[in-house]
Image 1 (tube, helix red, strand yellow):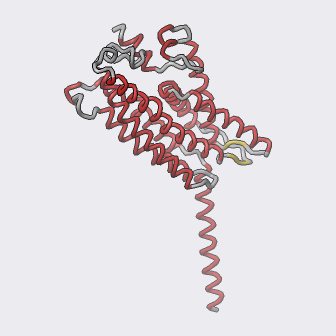
Image 2 (cartoon, helix red, strand yellow):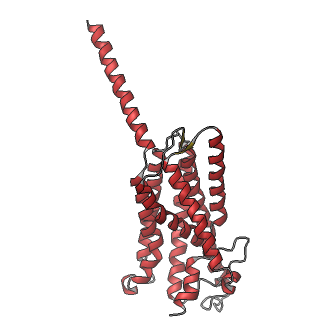
Image 3 (cartoon, rainbow, N blue to C red):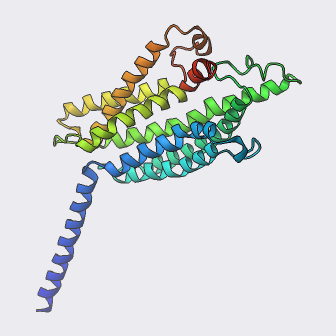
Length: 297
């Protein structure tokens, strides 16, 4: 009799464990509106809104030798974004390497922190007349500095802000998104819900800002084409992206369109052409602002 009771107890525990796993699996497969909404909202407020709040708020509130409101926004971004990325990976339908994810998160925080310092000083320079559409040595407030070695220091600051900081920040960011996307495939056809379509525009528009202002066109296109190749490969296996994978893929697709329209709009701008002479001509929105909007006022 006791053996029967024990077997029944084990069976009930086993059934409860299977039921719990099924609930967890369904949670991973449904559309993660809460995470996508939080990511989009904090990206717009803490990243895009960062330089805007520095311009709007009175300078008396944040002296030039103290952190600005935008710096506090950046600090919050450096904490909240890695947390949301980790939560996103936790809901991945596929088990991923924790070591790879941890290395990406650590590198992300390091790069974003480097950018925090460089960007803080560069935006303070804007308040003193620094022109973003000009190179460091061509800026009126920089080119006549004495001794001339000070100009090298400002170029080093620009390198940490616009190059090293961006690479260490954005490479792990897109790696984590791609790792998550590569696990969002199943045999079932899952469409993006209405809530996802409502988030698609703000999400794609933010990625447009990220690509253009961050000057990471090559990195973004590499990630996008890797996603396209993954979709093609998985379709040969009879698999298709779930609602979360489709949302991310559609967001990147719209971003490609927005970046193309942005480049076409400024294609014949001689000043910005001189500032961005590389293989990919993608001007920064804030350079456009200092050249055509702020100067006109």
